Length: 497
Ligand code: AMP
Ligand code: MG
Image (tube, rainbow, N blue to C red; front, side, top):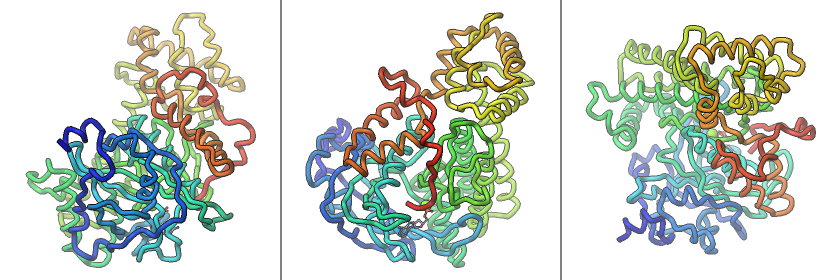
């Protein structure tokens, strides 16, 4: 009965069933505590697509209890709230106890549709808060909410977002902002840094317990492997390589690729000062706090590899060094192949030809030199006419100042001819891999200002509509596909959240 209603997405809040397997791990893994209440909470955003993951009826968001529950003021039967501790390398420096200072795992909604961690981010202090207030601001909750759903819709593994609950409680950052709580949904929030915590403390038995837990719950197919822990490392390496290949292909810059922000499931996690590439610059640094450019766009693949070394080091008590090293060598080919495959598709190439990697490099050089809008370029490339005298004006216009565009277009035309590419079919394939809409920073900012200044949340809703179907043409939504207006050049995002 309950199962059928879960499948229909018809459950009431009180009918959700919870478990908290993470809570059954030893005491050193977490602290049980209740979220800190927020005064007069109100619903800012609700995402029906995430509600469906747990079988919750959309109509439940209209109940006043909903905001109370998803800011942590009221607990549902079965919740077993806890804060999970982890460490991590922050900008290359190991921090022995780093998080989780502001997220509380409520439990796993478990039922017909699998098991999903429900986690409140910004629900008050925990024993791991260090100097922090345990809160998140409305601005950063909206940014994470939009980005995580946008990434999911682009086919990129990500944590999900169920809701944002706001409150007028002031929170001090660079200026005074207001508090909010984001409810995240994911199969697991375990990070590389969770392993690093126990390894750094010499608690090798906890490293083993955690590795076994992750295999059991999330990689059950590895249980029967000859060396399950090594198999886990290899699987995380492969997933991370494929994830970062997807980031690079769509132009996503994470901004803070610390090892605590790396998911053991290969999900994009912890959206802070991220950015989607606009005018293409391969050295782009989206995080204003990242002075050295450690997490620049073109550094991401190498940084992910570095982070995997940290994970492997934390797992060393469970495997031979040579095996771990051999596994780490699998990263680069996995990334390179994955990236080239995605970029070939973005270029509309159906076959593999010898010069493809060089053509791709030169395409990116053309984009970089002209700072052409990355998303617009690939979307317009779908309309490229390979007829001999076609001027392809909308594409050419992106390179008005460039002397190299003409030669590049000729070369691209020849490459299409090499596989007898048919324009119409190519266009429809390309429009399925080249999004029309990405979460440009100024779009998020516009929605945030409306929400913060006027309590108008319609901007979030409208953005979600295009971001949840980023490959489609949306009537009357052309403005959301446009490059940033001049006022946006003053925007910057930092670690403050
Ligand atoms: P981040 O750089 O956002 O990934 O943050 C790193 C860690 O710092 C997180 O895991 C949190 O536990 C902690 N943290 C960040 N902001 C706060 C805050 N306002 N209060 C307490 N802890 C925080
Ligand atoms: Mg983090």
